[in-house]
Length: 197
Image (cartoon, rainbow, N blue to C red):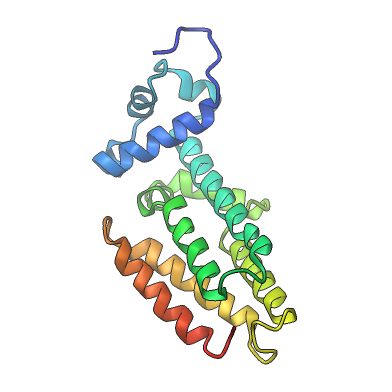
């Protein structure tokens, strides 16, 4: 355990990762501030020193994971003209699935105060699924300009379909069945991108 009064590097991420492990291992009901700090090997009160309470902590965790996912989606811009469009989109979708564990996203829905804090964060401009959708649309439009996606393809609708499916899979997937997710996304992209590249 870290000594009292000694700054812990990357404390916020350490606590977030600990919470994800607790929920994945023991379920949402097991998430308490004490369980998080024990898992993170920190002093018991450190979570409440940095967050107003467990609900704010959960909301910040969810907002952080959405922001991370949005950054990953925006990185698609660097992939324009490389690999295949389907491969590039599938790679990002699978990374998003890992970055947004359903148990963590579900936490904010099962705790009303955490849900309120999360909604307030989104309303204040924190990245959410719409940010990811815009990143996908921008990527597809860039591929269109480069001639790899047909000019008559509806980039915005393709992006909406991919993000909508990703959201659905996040909320309904069974842990340990990643191959099903990969196959589903592959089939969707094959239909949506028919005639591209």
